Length: 99
Image (cartoon, rainbow, N blue to C red; front, top):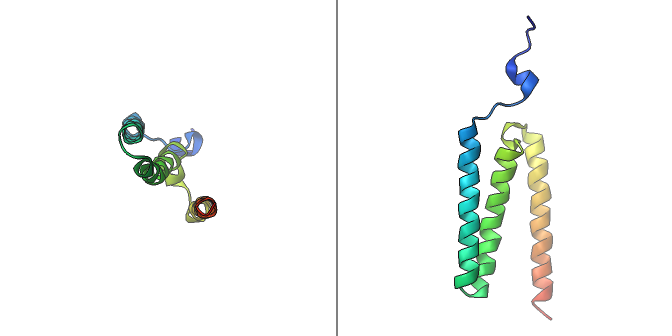
């Protein structure tokens, strides 16, 4: 038989329970965002979206896209790309607040 391990041929094996748990958390965070946007003032809704949505994106990157198993260089590149996006969105909010 070959000396190739199961992980090398099939990638990273993650238990289904982990994916189900992360999915339940994502659904719960979506329900929280929906509740906040329907019940509270618009300013609080925007604040909730700006804090919870990156958390949801991080969970998707980390578990569903297997960033958890990648090296530090790729993690740093993803972080820099997302940080740049946050800066540009922040600049957009700053620009539109003075019109």
